[in-house]
Length: 462
Image 1 (cartoon, rainbow, N blue to C red):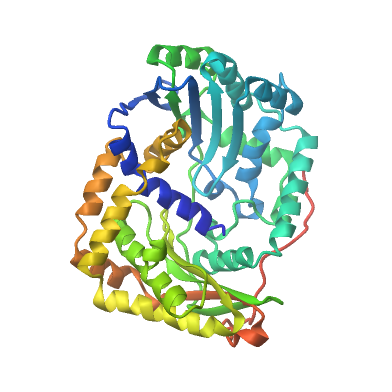
Image 2 (tube, helix red, strand yellow; image 1 turned 180 degrees about the vertical axis):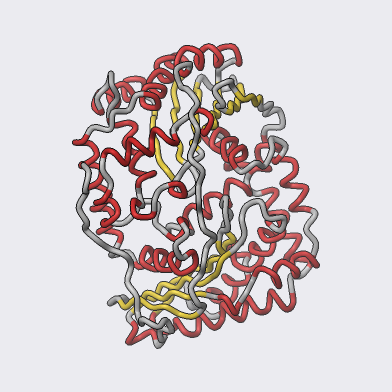
């Protein structure tokens, strides 16, 4: 699901940070801002002859025009499809010959270009990375091919009830805010995007003063400085356009339905949440772990799966992004059980608001959040991505130590307070994709049952 996938990934990254501190106490991050405005983060590691490079561009789908949804994602994906000196085939062959990996993608808040390469091929790999970054040509043929790939993928996704529910939920919670759109866009918006749009987005946003370069592996500070001077000295700073983004405007609370001939109902419910910088972030992570984020340890899983047998899995999350994220609960159940499942979720939310957590639940949540993830962020790729995200969200390089301290500082009173303030039953928006004749739920929107966006508009400026 679109809002759930990135949200859970960010939750994982932010929650795992303590592992960098405990598993790798000598991380020794060197940070500096180059004259071009590029922020450089460097960790030297000599345990493996590998280097991981992660370039974060501080512009993602948030910075694209609404009518051109998918532009940031399309631009990123085209970086590896041809430069002035290399064709798409040339790039693929060079990457394969080195046994390296090179990729680019975009999310809501930022875009990323990643390189993983053996130490012996670092200069070649860095040269290739610099070439796709500084000299992309965005060939018309590749643009057309990529656009057709995206449209095909979107057509396939329309068969997925989870995708339909996620799309509808995002639209209702965020309204016209960029977080309400799919990062990949729609068939109609992709059809509008032409080469001029791609080139324009690239020129305005892919500049060093709008970027973070995170490098982890067997490369010294002097070697890295030489690589940057040799390959990125021609990357010149430029003014980055200001973003004029309106605050999210959620639809009226209630239940929305999408009718499909399915044996199971897909249910998503929730409401607008908080931004990553919110002071309640840590207490919310603890509270949510107890409520529905803790897998088999959560109240929701215990009640709806173990006691009532309504589902194989139910999960909740408080996503966190540059701007307001969302509180989301998701599950699947048989069609006829959908009303009972929704009612039970609301009861559990109500109980958390009214009663808070127990001391046993609190200690278990803290132990898990601070102690279970260290094993999962021990690769150079994970550390490189993590450092770039920490810099982007302004968390500070001491974040690993502060994360564990702040989680451990959460009290029972705080858990109850944030539940009362941030779990708002009166604002819940519920989306159900099911065979409505069996599900027994009624749509409360003025227009009745909804559909996920679709379209097959044609490009106007290819």
